[in-house]
Length: 243
Image 1 (cartoon, one colour):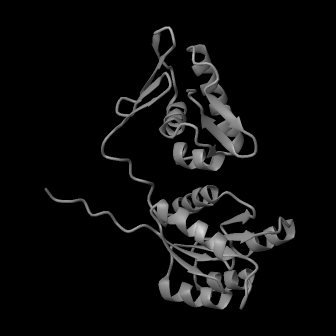
Image 2 (image 1 turned 60 degrees about the vertical axis):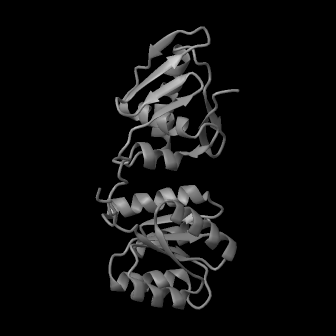
């Protein structure tokens, strides 16, 4: 049987002078299937950019050698490679300056590494630098508490403690959200991750996800499942199926 050869993941140039943060970003990006190259200096970053031609640059503003704004100016002089700027200062003037110079997105520390990965994916997809993630070949049946999700038929069933089973009347987005949350019960998913995973064709805002999850919660509750989905304040959502 012939093996399927997948193309290599997109190359992300990570420009970050704090080693701990750089290592965490590196691990999260690689876990998401991307290739990475780390540098900690603005001048070195510019040389690496010209040598490696990365698919995206994750660029800290405050760097030794050459600051991130000047690196961005040079990158834009060479072309339209996507750039996400990173800073510890939530300053609107800096933000507007970076975006006016051609940054594709802007992230303020402290941030969730998973959320940064989701933004990287979104920018790459929006700019056409990377295709949408390929769905796995084999569909799964996911079980969490009294919920059973069949990914092949796109159906979800609920079984209450008294043994009553019913088909949940979910929209496609609600089904995707439930499948994502149930795939790793008790894990907290950020809103950005849920948007990237469950609405990949959309530029939805956080409040849109909140609306879909509110409707999903209501349907689960009406089916006798109680409050399965929890809000984690300031972070996102998780499915908590109980003991």
